[in-house]
Amino acid sequence: MERTAWTDLSLAVSGWGCVRNGRVLLRELSFELGPGQLLVLKGRNGAGKSTLLRSLAGLMPWRAGRLSWAGQTLQPNAAPYQQQLAYLSHQAGMNDALTALENLRFALALHGQAWNAVHVAQTLATLGLQDLASRPFGRLSQGQRRRLGLARVVLGNRPLWLLDEPDNALDDEGSACLAAILAAHCAVGGLAIVATHRGLALPDDGMRTLDLSRPARAGAAQEAAC
Amino acid sequence: MLSAVFVREMRLAVRRPAQALSGLLFFVLVGSLFPLALGPDTALLRQIAPGVVWVAALLALLLGQHRLFEADLADGALEQWALAATPLWLLVGMKVAAQWLLAAVPLLLAAPLLGWQYGMGAEAMAVLLAALALGTPSLSLLAALGAALTLGLRGQLLLALVVLPLSIPVLIFGSHAVTQASLGLSAAPALNLLGACLCLALLATPWAIAQALRLALE
Image (cartoon, rainbow over all chains, first blue to last red; front, side, top):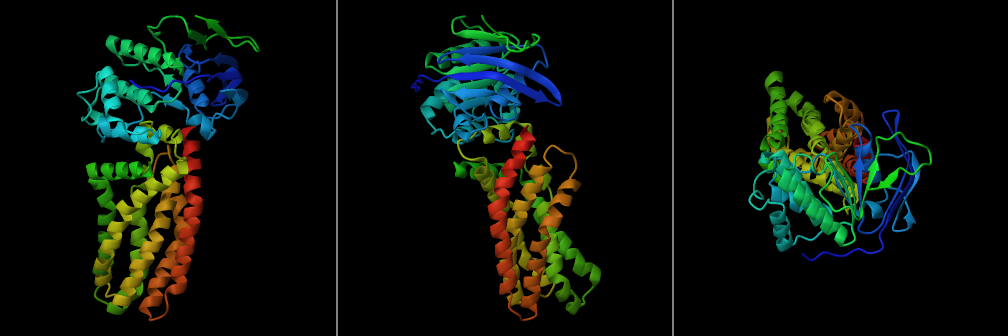
């Protein structure tokens, strides 16, 4: 697979705070990610994992903090930054009435990626989706939808991945696929922030964990090397 | 990129044709009910024709519009639109253009059918088509704005409450143009004003729709 390699990209977040429904959900959150690094978000239900990912994607307002991407401080909803990230929410963002391939083609057009049939076929085969490409998205199982969402993230070819529970509904083989995809992404210098409950089957080097369910202490570094 | 949005909308309409055709059916049915109810009074029918056709077109365009962004919000597609390489207002503008083609062009094709029922002359009919062609894009844009503002809320009534007051100028100028033509007067001033409304809608609404969608995503 020919992939562009990214160098000297970094994401630094400091003093991040979010308010959701009138409740302070995240407070004084700080972390840094260098090229090829992966941050695993952990935390109980309602701890703010999805909120953090959405606010980092610029899809919801944040109350406090600074975000700098590749050394530049900017707003998370600035277009140049948003065009560098791939976000996978709980839904794959695909329409039930269109086939998997049509959905994927549209998603790649949205990402501004040219359609490379060989590359797409390879990726679908890696994820075990090659036989499902012409089936309507609405007929796929939850796990297959998740895999297609991952295919979109991989093919989108963007350096920063924000994945919200990508291992949801995946079987063991799917989880292994996910780990392989993340390892490949980090190997070419990409960054990823992954919220998960189950943990990723990945080697520990280059992977860090941020636990959101700990009580926030102002100013205290919350990250710990895994 | 923009053609991808267009192709997607067309594909969805082909897969679910009922939604695209219900507006057309509504337009023809409502337009045909008035002559049946009022009886064969040619002078009266000719007098009310512009207003009836325009109101029928407006309501037909609003029909089902509250669902415009609903599926995209529910399946997470809107989030991807917001992160796309193309600005959101352009994508939204393209979606509305596709929706206009799907919803309003059939109305334009069916409008002569209604015109004949009301005994409209050839000149008035031509002006009616021109007025509908100029006015319906504004209505589609306003309906999309209403859909974006009321996204995530239940019920269609709110959309009508938002959109109907805003569409009054289009309704007035549109029916006025046809009335002028049927009286043998120049329809140009009213058509010019319809064009001005369209320019205003084209300038302001795509941006406003994009902002409303971003708010709905939060």
